[in-house]
Image 1 (tube, rainbow, N blue to C red):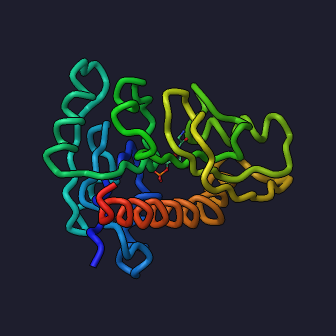
Image 2: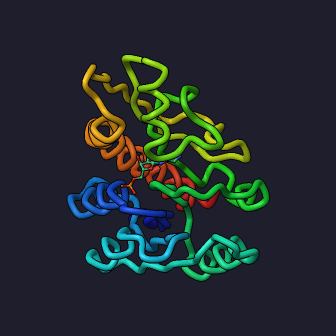
Image 3: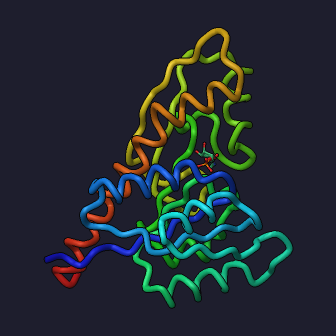
Length: 204
Ligand code: GAR
């Protein structure tokens, strides 16, 4: 029996991507992983309630004006024996120093087809506003490894979503979530968990 990979999910808001991960675990979509911890960098994030509803530990470590944020985060992750981190609507940028401690162990979901509409300043609804403003007819979502460059790590999975003439940023955001994000993120997480479980059990 392989050891399950312990996953921490980082969130900032509503947590619909977290919900997709939790549902996937419940329905057996993540046989080599377990969601062991949810961390929010904003107070009152609904995502923490979702964690609670699933019996998963949820912790808030505010990032704003908190110079010790990443140290607190790292200490918590170590204390909970976390193996990988999934950024699921986590809207703070992690430092190169922090990311360097987790090589190939952090993945992120971004709501566009990288390299379009990504990098610093492109998050949440702003990404969809930019796509509509530019007039592209296709957008989508990307899961990628996280390195020191915002949205710059190796791409793992992408899925395209058509833009409709009557789309608003909100309708587009919803469709990109439904058709791409909630499918790709559990898939990529399960894949990474399996790879790591196999590595860890081989003692690599
Ligand atoms: C999602 O669309 C996610 O892709 C995006 O924020 C939203 C969070 O929604 N993330 C980024 O823009 C990261 N650059 P959720 O809290 O309902 O999962």
